[in-house]
Image: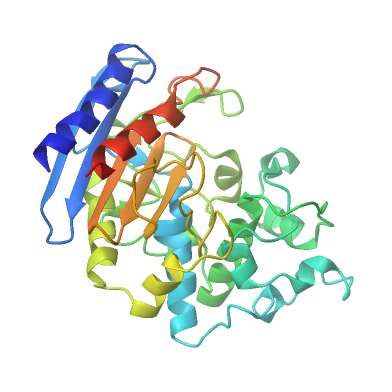
Amino acid sequence: MMDRFDHAFAHLQTSVTAGKIPGGVLGIINADGQRQTRATGFAALQPTQREMTEQTWFDLASLTKVIFTTSRILDLADQGKIDLDAPLITVLPDLHQYDNEAWERKVTFRQCLGHQTPFPAVEPIYTYGRDPELLRAFILQREWRSGPSVYSDINFILLGLALERMAGKTIWQMDAGPGFAFSSAPENTAATEDCTWRKRILCGEVHDDNCSALQGAGHAGLFGTVGAVLDFAHDLLQGRNVAQSSVELMCTPLSDTTTHGWQRPHLDWSGGALCSNQTIGHTGFTGTGLWIDFERGHAWTLLTNRVHPSRHFNSGIIGLRHAVGDAFSAL
């Protein structure tokens, strides 16, 4: 594992040295629990420099979809509390409630998990106001424009609303899970963007605008360290603290690119070209990612702050993810 780790870490170090990303932490874990982690670069460049460490917290962005939301939806299905093939209106009966024939009322939990709905990829919900309850009502009652199935934050925002409805509390009032939280101390956290909307450099508060306006959502908002992410991956590799049916569904294809909540190997996917077909993975906009290869019995995570201080820069994160994945997957 050491040689592969050094090879993978060299790609991260090159990106940091070239100034493409401020810093990052790389980690890998085997099914037997053996792990290795290493940090490089800076957790923040502005307003002052702070070194990256292996204890640095990250805004995990869309890793929230798989670590938090998917896991909970599949757990509820395993308990028989929801039917994945039932429409969302079994939990959210007020979804587009003024038109019983609306296509939104026919969308199922499984379709949302696999991004097989007509929802748009993203919507600037935060531009419609800052009242989180009003925005929730707006999401539920909006006549959404429909189109071809694409990877859509809206799918997981709705799944998050279903979790909230069933729990009787907002996501940010829920337990984030072992080692995770919905915010973190700025002095221990990798900074993200100098936000033009909030007019400050974000650090310890969620980067995603819609999640911020909603004060919690199913598509983003989770914070964690490399250790917490690897612990989560190890649980899946071991089938521990998770139902076997849930792990099986996470690996079960719903399309050429998706499983239940996760991405699967396809041309130019984020996990590289050398992993096994039994690999699942996901990325986060802030520069994060997690991949789990069940056939080879290992998982790796690459956590960076590539949007600091701005997203409007070619960080090379796509190529970096491919290179790291191939380094770990080479036989």
